Length: 83
Image (cartoon, rainbow, N blue to C red; front, side, top):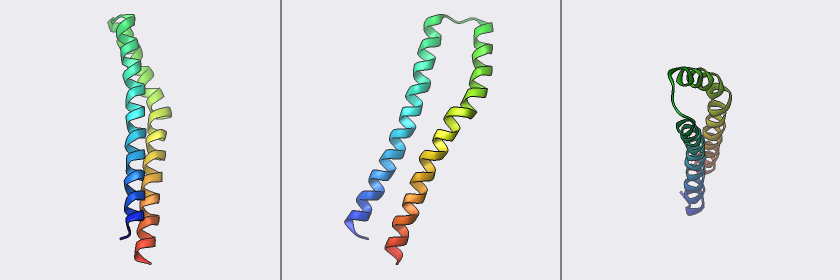
């Protein structure tokens, strides 16, 4: 396999890792905000329901895009290698 393809795959995987870390940091900031506001059982229950609905709308699609691009890019590089 050529060095260029290997470098491309490494960069692609690093981009996927970076995207995952950005999503993690976004959730971490939310948790810090919640801790600063104070914790009550009602607030925790509300956050739990909010997270369940918003996570499916924001985090899951972001992860799907990140890893879809990574897999498609890897398959393209593999196709170049094979043919």
